[in-house]
Amino acid sequence: MTMTSTAPAPVSLYGFLTPKPGHADEFRKLLTDLVEPSRGHEGNLQYHLHEQEDGRFFLYEVWHSQKHLDRHNETPLLRVFTDKLPEHIEGAPEVYFGAMMSPHPDIVA
Image (cartoon, rainbow, N blue to C red):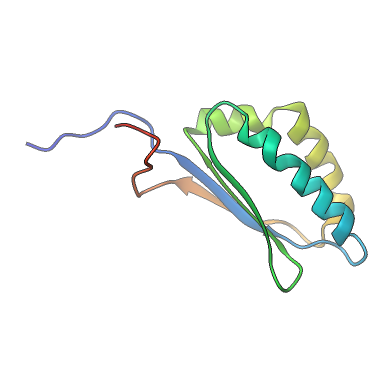
C-alpha cells in the first residue's frame, strides 16, 4: 500500500539578478535588507542571498506553499523592492520556481 501526502509541496524560488554598472553597492543593500524580514514571514523555510564572482546576485527561497509565497510577495517590503528593481538591474531577472521534489525536514507529510 502506497501512502500519498495531501500536504502541498514546498515551493522554491531562485534566480540571478545583475546590477547595472555603478549600482552594485546600493543594490546589495536593498537585497540584504530583504533577508531577515523575509525569513520572518509566515511560511518561509529558507531565504538566502549569494553574491557571485561575476557580480550577479543569486536569491534562493523556499516557502511552505504557494499561498505563503504569494502573501510574501504582497507585503509592503516586497512591493517597495520590486518598484525599485528596474532602477538597479540590467536586463530582466533570471527567475525560476517550482514545487520542491525532495522532502524538506521542516515539513511533516
